[in-house]
Each structure stands twice: as structure tokens, then as C-alpha cells.
Length: 128
Image (cartoon, rainbow, N blue to C red; front, side, top):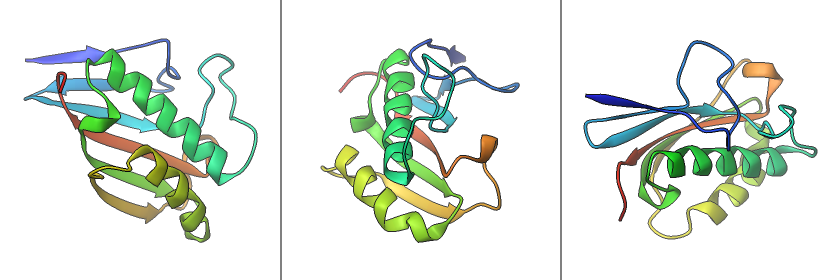
């Protein structure tokens, strides 16, 4: 069994995919880019602001699935430029201060809509 997650509190999918899928006790959240869900446009600013928006978007998707960032077990961070790593990492760390999840970080040749950062997550389903 799987459950498709969709919320208007996060940017809508811009392709044939779901914001998240709950299956096997986990929530698999699709990658989020720094779109403001109200305007559909990128947030103003650089990598720090973009990373913050991405994590806010992921938080809303996870909330819609009945879980939270605190239950994330794995993230993958895709960056347009690894030179932005320190600034991204500082913001990322503020969202995962206690017992941070496992993580991979890679530089991608290009991200959707030329975003500077995209992050996807896997979280435990259900509340704490």
C-alpha cells in the first residue's frame, strides 16, 4: 500500500511526480526547490535564502504526510555550485540541530528552473 501526499502549503509538482509518497513506514519526499508556494516564484536572495525555503517546503510536505523534519532519516542535497556548501550547510544545520539525518551532497550540472539547491528526504512515517 502507498499513499500519495499533496499539499497546497508547498509548491505544486512541476512534472509527473508526487510531492511525497508514504510506503513501508517511510515518507519519500520529492526534491524541493526554493519556490514560494504562494507565488510560484523563487525566493529573493542567495543560497542561504534558497536553502531555507527548500527546507520550509519540505517541512510542509512532511506535515501533510503526518510527520516532520525531526523524523527525517536521510537527505540528498543537490547543489549547482559546491562553492556554496558552507552557506548551505549553515542553514541546513539550523533545521537539523539534534541528531541530524544521514546525508549525501552532490554538485549537479543543472537543477530545475536553474535553482541553486534542491533537497529530497526520506522520513519515518507517523508521529513521534
